[in-house]
Length: 106
Length: 392
Image 1 (cartoon, rainbow over the protein chains, first blue to last red):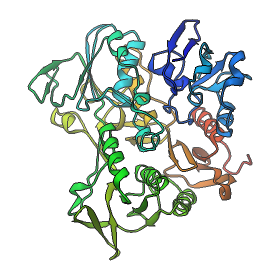
Image 2 (cartoon, each protein chain N blue to C red; image 1 turned 180 degrees about the horizontal axis):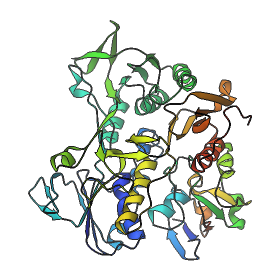
Image 3 (tube, rainbow over the protein chains, first blue to last red; image 1 turned 135 degrees about the vertical axis):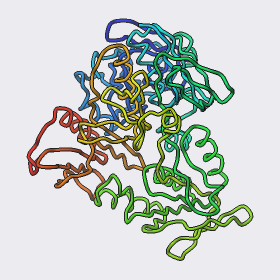
Image 4 (cartoon, rainbow over the protein chains, first blue to last red; image 1 turned 120 degrees about the horizontal axis):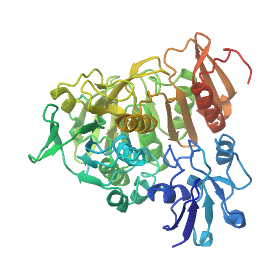
């Protein structure tokens, strides 16, 4: 099972082993990583699971679909080239070692 | 701060109250009591991703099981509370146990309104995970599915059934779908898409009686026709769970009446979520909301207040439904609008409806326009008063 490191807005790190197929949002919320709200529970409805992805893993992620792109336009924290919604990225073996940074506002 | 907080109900509101109390630094005991016997988990996917097989039970959990121990939240699951004793500050359970509290948070939710027609004993309703498992198992076996109620839950179930190639009929008493909350233009889109997917929509019609014949059902409709089905589901609204509160003498009126902090008429008892009736500044009246957003935000407000921080509840209400490719996001409360404008393209199912009352924007419904929805929530939050006919 892949290991993902979350960095909270305050700098605290959580390294978690997540089941394949879990989303980055679920992994964070279920393990009480702070900074991700996920108000809609992972339905790509609220844009409150905004995360910044470690650059070197960006190409390994699934493409951003139109819906996610539009939601990313409305995030509270600055949208960057490595912005994603945590609910739209599922954990796979090739993402082992991924570092996910959480913005200070959702 | 210390003491014993007891929370009744493990849905979104009940769980959030526990989580927020710990986040706010509450150092006393927290007990979460629920008649449901599973770990607290999300409800919206039950009528969507879970029934579609896209989301597992594990993925629905609010927190991993270890969280409750780490955070000293005592779970008493499968335990039914039968009485609140406000003077003695304790609860009684079905098995005769007493649970003392210094503060009580009622997150008892709402129960499905039962279908009021003869022969409805076998009808299934969706409220919790156990219901969803039961419906999922029966759906697999069924060829023909009849759904009474053309609201959010009924139509989400219809969409799942139609995508599974079932023969689906929706029976709705109103003159259009989701009539209570949507304008005609949106009801029309959902009707068209359901019909394109093969769903039979019967409007202005009620089920008068259900006859069981071997393993199938024949539903007599008020228009004289009958519908044959292997499975009958109903989603015709809910009744707030106020029995405990009423018996304890708490003021109730379409839900448990609470102030802007979530306090009931007894100051150390709070009520949050679907069961609570509260003044809503965005609706400009008292109401009871049935939504995840409201459950979560009311719970946060109550937890803060209990910790001595008085922030009146003021969050833009928002809701969503997902059926086929249609993702509808609603911000604000549109009831009482006197003007509306449409932006986008209704022909391609991508548009937003902006509602105004007295020239002020009060709500926005966005169909497959998530960017509009997020902007709308910010505008409503800021109390924006856009002119009614502005171009955007």
